[in-house]
Length: 350
Image (cartoon, rainbow, N blue to C red):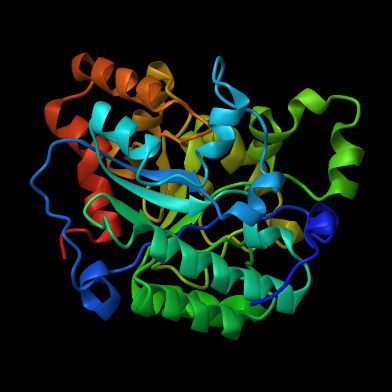
C-alpha cells in the first residue's frame, strides 16, 4: 500500500473538536467471510465488546497509561496481541467472546481524506486477518474514514459483508452524512459511541491549566451532545464507561435542554426517553456497583452491558467485579448484563 500517512503529524492533522468511536455490529451469519464462524451460545462466560487492538504502525500514537502496577512494555505489547496473553487472560477470567476495535486515535486522527481512507482499509484488512483463525472467541470492529459519507458506507459494507467485521470510528451527525446512517439502519446494526481526545488546539485551550482532567477523568464526559436519532429513529447506539456518566445526570440534562428549544434545539424527545429506547451503555472501565444499581433504576438493566476496556483496564479486575454482582443482581439480570444483551445486539445467535 505504501506510505499513506505522515505519522509525525498524526495528532496535528485532526479536523474536529471531538470524535467518537462508533462501534457498528454486523450480522455474522449472512456473509461469506464469516460463514465458517464457530461461535455457539453454549457457554456461560461473559462477552466483552469494548476491547482495544491496533496495528504496529499506530502503537507509537497510543495513550501510555497502563493499569496501576502493570509494566509499560507489557501494556503496549497488549495492543497488537490477540492469541497470546489476551486469550490467556480471557481463559483465566471467564470471557467467552471478545470484540476488538482499533484503539484511539486510529483513522479518526487523520484529516487527509486519501490517507485516512487508505489507513481504514489497511486496519480493517489486518483486523480481519488477526481474528480469522479464532472466530469462536473473537469478533472485530471495522474502522472508517468519514471524509466522504458515500465512501464510508461502501467501506462499511465491505467490512461487514466481505471481511466479517462489525465496526467503525466516527462522529458525524450533520445531514451530509445521512447516506452513511441510512446504511447503518439498512444493515440493522447498533452503533457504539466511544470518546477520544480533543485536537491539540482545543485541548491546550481547555486543559493546559489542569492536564490531569484530560481524557477519561473529565474530558470524555462533556462532549456527547449531538445525535441523529430524530432522522434515524431505528438506530441503536451504545455508549461506553457507564454512558460516560450521562445517565447519572438525566434530570438536569432534560431540564437544561428543554430551556434551549426556543434557540433551535432539534431533539424531538428528551434525553431520558432516548436512553430507554435507542441508547445503551457498557460498564467498561467503570466497575462501580452502586453506580450500576443507580443506572439500572434510571435506564433499566435491559440497556446496560458488561465490557472491560482491555488493555486500558485489567481483565481480572473486571472478572472479580462480575463475581461480586451475584449477590446484587437477579440471576436473569446478571445473565443479560454479562452475556444476553450482547448476543441480542450483536446478532450472535443468528
